[in-house]
Length: 281
Image (cartoon, rainbow, N blue to C red; front, top):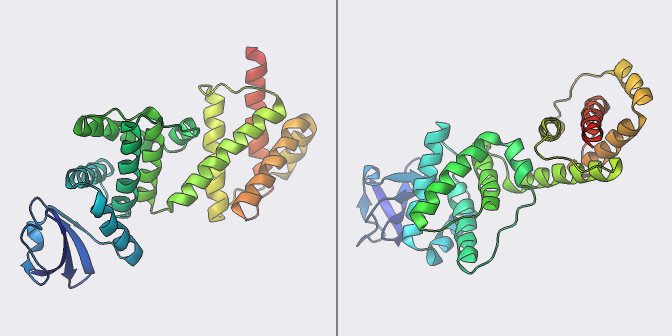
C-alpha cells in the first residue's frame, strides 16, 4: 500500500512510494474524497509515473491548476498509445512538456491563431517514425477534442515524441532541426538554386545532415578519405568550398570540432543535388 501525499484533482494524486519516493497516480475518481495520509493501493491506478526532478513535479502540479481534468486524461491516454506504438516506456517528462505545449496550442487554435512550422519537412525527414506516429495520434486527438489541429503542429508533436523516445533534451533537438534548416538555406543561397523539397536527393541530403550532426555530437567520426578529398576539391571546387562553409557553421553551433572527412560526403551530396536541379531547369 502507498500513502497519499497530495490530491491534485479527482483523477490524480501524488503518493509516497517505497522505491521512488514520490509517484503520480492517475485513475478515474482516484483522488475523490482522499486526503493526505490515506492509504492507496497502486493497482487502483490506471497509470503511475515518476517525476524524479523536483522542478518537473512542480511544473506538473502547476499545470493541473489550469488544465482541466478531461484534457489531462486525454494526454495520459495519448502517452499510453505512444508507448504501445513504440513498444517501450518513454521519458516521463512528456507528461509535462507535451501536455503544456498542446494545451496552449489548442487555446491558440480556438482563438483563431494559425500554427506555422518552417521546419516541418526537415522534421519529417529526420524522424520519419516519430512523424508518422504524431500524424496518427493527431488524428485521434482531433476526434477526442473535436478540433482540427493543423499539419504544422504535427512536426512539433513529433519532436516531443522523439525527445521522449530517445531521452534527448527537447531544446537540443529543436536546435539541431533549426541548424539543418539553416544549412539548407545556405546551400540554396550559395548555389543560387531553389531545391525541390520532394526531390530524392534533397531527402538524402537532409538525412545526411541530421546524421552528421548526431555523429559530431557523439564524436562518432567517419573514416578519413584524403585521396577522394583531393579529387573532389579539384573536380567540384564550388561544392567543396560550400561544404567547408557548412562545416564551419556546424562547428560554431555545436561547439565542437567537425572532422575533415565530412567535407567528402557533403561535397558528393551537394554536387548530386546541384546537378539534378540544373538538369531539371
